[in-house]
Structures are given as structure tokens and as C-alpha cells.
Length: 271
DNA sequence: CAATCAACCTGGGTGC
DNA sequence: TGCACCCAGGTTGATT
Figure (cartoon, chains in turn green, yellow, cyan):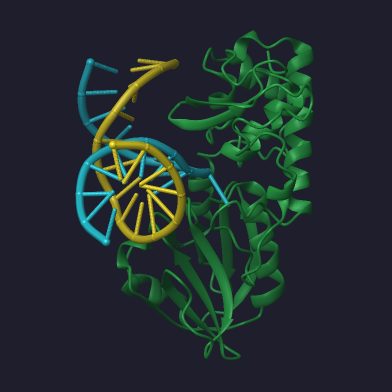
């Protein structure tokens, strides 16, 4: 589910809502999603206070005041919700962290692909994060982007979604950015002209910023930390618009499979 | 190295 | 109604 803008929205919400709170307990009905184990996580986090929450790639990082932190990946259907303890159980509630002040941080996740992982220290975190590419809204430069694309003959959409190369771009924002840049998602990455690369670079930044501005895309399951939908789905240009008119040229939006993922594009505009 | 596919899970939608 | 099948915002690991 969540891509960079959705994870950013949740992370910002949590920074506002739970910093300063003390962790009182943790329980789960889905032990596989808590790593390395519920017992180890419990021992490491109970009694600690939440110091800071920040996003990196599609991960939420919850920093504690005992040098440890929790990393959370929401995968396709994960939600992170802040609720009062007496509020009814959320749909697909899997992990609950009890907080001071009578609140809970809940991981809800229909498909159980999401996970929460204990990280012991900065060194371990650094090692994990080294596997992810630069941030497209932060340290990724146009020169980096050119280098990344020119280094592979894979379809440009697949290349730009490779988390080892660039962090945070998922299926929705890849489709939207390629439409804005008028580039065929199947085009080999190393065949893009310098102009096209520049246009795509700008388009990526534009759609990610728009996604954040609209608090993410609630196409299916995404909700922010207070359980509210985002609105970016109301602004989709191609995603989920199979058979509808291209907003630029009025021909029909096509849907194909690319790298196993549904891919929407306008075969007339995107060359 | 690249492409393809199955796996991890659950539920909604579609077509027969 | 029932059933079979396809689809889903992500990632990993096996196979070819």
C-alpha cells in the first residue's frame, strides 16, 4: 500500500501525536509480524520513551530514548493508528503498543505482510538503511538519476521502482510520474534522452510532493494515523483509469502488466 | 545480470 | 448461491 507520500504522512502524524509518550506494553495476535520476536521486542522497548518519529524510504522509524528504535514497513495493506485504549478494535488489528496517557499505537494489516522490527542501535540501523537508494525529495540529484537510468536496460518503470537505486517510488507514483513526463513505462531506462530523464526527474518530485500535499492516496486501504483517508486518489491522472479518456489526448488509457505489476499509461501520449 | 514466477496473506470483484 | 479465478499501493528468494 503505502509509498513515500503515505509513509511520510503517517510519520508526520506520529511525530505530532506520540513523541514524549512512554511505552507500557506490547501485544499481538500475529507474532510473525514482530521481529525478532515479541518477547525480545517487549524487553527492549517497555519503559522507554518515544523521542522522535521519521520516515526513510518506505519505512517508519520510531526512535526511543534508550538508543533503540522500531522500524515499521506497511507493505500493501498496513495502517498505523493512534487510538484511545477504550476505542473499539480496528479492522485487522495485529499489533498494539500501549502508551502512557491511555493511548495505543496499533498496527492493522489485512494481508499480514507488514512488519515491525526492533533495531538495537545506530550502527545496525545504518547497515539496514545502506540497502536503500537516495531520497527523491532530498538527496537524489539529477546527475545521480541520470547515472541510475543509464546503467540499466530494464524498463524505466521497473528501474525507477527499484528501492536499492531510489527510495520510495511505488506503483501509483511511478505510473503518474511517467504519464506527466510522457514516457512509455516499457522504454528501456538507458534509452531515455537527456531531456526525457530531466522531465521524469521533475515529474517524480512533482507527484510525490502532490501526494504529500493531499495526505496520500487512499485507493484501497490507506489511512493516516488518525484513521482518515488521503485525497490524492481524487487527482490520479492515469492510475486506475483503464479504458477512460486520457486527460491530455482523449484516447483510451491502457493497462498492461510490467514486472508483474499493473501499469496504466496512455499509448498515444507516452512514447 | 535480467526476466519470470511463486510465496507471504486476506478479501473483494467478476464471470460461469 | 456456489465456485473458480483474478486482482490488489511491496518485497524476497528460487529458477531459468
